Amino acid sequence: MTAIWQGFLKAIELIVSLNHEVLEITVRTLAISISSTVIAGLICLPLGSLIHFNNFRGKRTVINLIQTFYSVPTVAVGLIVFLLFSRSGPLGFFELLFTPQVMVIGQVILISPIMLGLVIAALKGVDRAAYETAIATGASEFQATTTVIREARYSIYSAMIMGFGRAISEVGLALMVGGNIRGYTRVMTTAISLETSKGDIVLSIALGIILISIALIINFSLSRLQQRY
Amino acid sequence: MKRKILKLFSTIIAVMVLLSLLIGCKPATPTTSVPQYPVHSPETRFKIATTTSLYDTGLWYYLEPMFEKYADVEMDIIYAGTGIALEYGKRGDVDAVVVHDPVAETQFIADGYGINQRYFAYNFFLIAGPPADPAGIKGLTATEAFKKIYEAGMSNPDTVKFISRGDNSGTHSKEKLIWSKAGYNYADIEKSGKWYVEAGQGMGPTLMQANQQQAYVLADISTFLAYSRNNNLTIVSLVEQDPIFLNVYDAIAVNPDTVKVQHLDIANKFINWLISPEIQNVIGTYGKAEYGRSLFFPLSDGSCNIEGCPSPDKYSTQVP
Image (cartoon, rainbow over all chains, first blue to last red):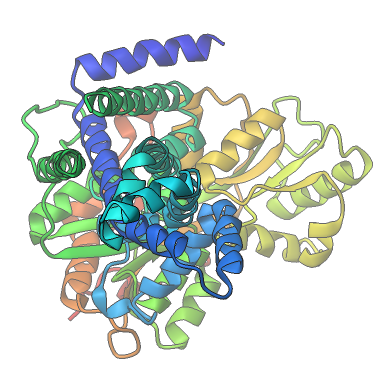
């Protein structure tokens, strides 16, 4: 247990001294995870609405499939993305392997099922009456759709946060496609993994504490923003 | 309402853009002990895959900024066992590999994936274990020690354990070689009992595990010294003197004729830089101050003259 206390002290020391490497890793972690969350959100919100508001054959199967992929292991996604973007793979000409960009792509793939599934669940939670009332009072289909999205905004917001959580906390994908390159693709989670395997437990705990604090701050500020309206 | 959602999204995107710009920022604080690690924005990126035992000693942290300055490139070092390092080479995901597995390397080059192989450093392996030495291997030869560990492990799997790298690394290959020289079939060893533990990790983490379980382990001397000092290992070196423990590191450029790589010129520059007198000197003195002995021996001075040492043309002639 003393390791945790020491880790806590080390975390404060690293923050206060603005340790350059920790700062750099933190900024990179946030940039990658926030980018993937935003991109995945921009894809999954319209896609989720499309799936929810349209009845088509196999809709149940699609939703089941999406929910199955909630629990896809991050290393499995990492392996597939690695094979895709490896120089000898089909997308190798992009030369994206071992770059932060491919980490964003991989994380988008990773968190899309969760975001998609939760957006659909959120929309489903809105009473059908909201949509029908909107249509009855002269709204176009698009306007009625956005009305329902507005009604479900808190749950959709939760879906985004969930996606962000999964993105910022995953290790397997970041390691496999990023390579944990110091100064280029090392993020908080891969740094914690490396430092732990090297035996520097105190530093790992410190990094973990910093990571959770960052996530806390982000959550706090976003929920304040959301409460404004 | 829609405008507010848009506003939220644009704030997030703005923050994100700001953060990604920040990544390109250069540092301001100099440090004295460790060579400062600048963070560049992407330029020409030269990627190498390196064996974990070189990485865990911190040698790369030391050499990397020097090479980046010399060649004006951004060097990316990917930490991997020899097995996956060579795989990265075959796939063209790295431009050069720095490994220490003679058998796998020969195959790599024979298959046409690697060229311009040059050896640049050597050290030795050792067998470390608990100070109490339950299998009684202190001072024996490598093969005798392995025999005793096997016998003791089979009869007392709870007190006598051996932690193997288990990851197709250069160290793992050396271990397999010693088992076969001692007269065992490696496939049998793997299944023989719970005394034989496959860590599946790099050298540093494997040492930590051996320390935790007070087990025997084959390690290169550099990683062992570095970890002994920094992590207060209680396992000690028990068997050191044996020609089979020779461990030679080399760098191989990935062949652009067989694999889609583009930086052969930088790879050649890198290899020549490693065997240059100045860097050979740096390698030879690395760790002396902290550990009392250097962690690696340079090859250029011709000091390596036991069986298994490479011939002079493999460590002193520059790559054209």
